[in-house]
Length: 339
Image 1: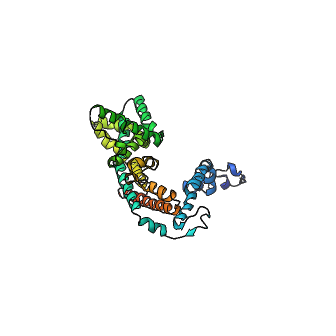
Image 2 (image 1 turned 45 degrees about the vertical axis):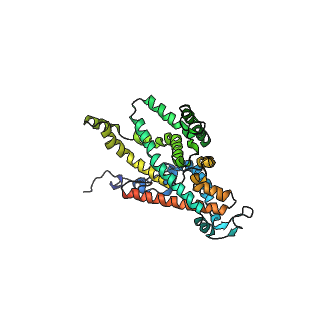
Image 3 (image 1 turned 120 degrees about the vertical axis):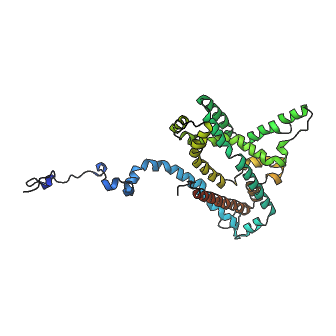
């Protein structure tokens, strides 16, 4: 006795249906194709074509403004003459680097850069974190939005305006010295005092960019599950204990990521800001790698010398961000990417 099945092809006497030719655009991928790891590149290209089209302008901008200028680093190995161009300039090998490493002004600018970067890392980096925690603890959304808007506005000011405001407050004829003179005390022109220049520059950075820096931390705080706070409060945890056991673990990954990025960008301590105040405090206190490359490279038409200083700075920054990312992975954090 033949077995009865639900498949028409197995029933005797029933004709097998001919396969229907389904057009390609209406064809449903089979089980093997529906799995993410088995999708062919044509299906993925058709599926993600909208995202790929939106990515094209960003890729073009990166190529034009970030990668194409890398070709100019070749001028660090030649005596670059802008009249004859890169290909016809005299090739001098590592002479620019030998001259750079033997220049005491270069080492002085490097010391100023590292000391200023250390002061900014210690005094500026924690400020956005503390400000974000403070705003997150404010219960009134209207008050929180007002404070966030007020702290965000200085980021859009130019450095000329920021330094002018500081000059009007703590300069020689500013409000602070007017107060000191009225009370028979010795005036103190902080804007021209080289001994406090690093603290002055860091305070300007905090006033200008602290509000901008809290955006990432506020976004990370918003992603923390509110049920965790409610459960902890029901268990008797106070404000500080909830912050220590819920908020800080939720922020830890973002803090490490921002610290790694900060270390990679630590030698960029400011160009316009220091260039404007250079003549007020002298180059001994304000000379950093960026201003050194500008004055002793572009200012003297020695473009190869300035390019050599820029390459040195880039190599140090790359080593710092690589080491910081390795250190983050060592302590179990993601860093710039998940290992």
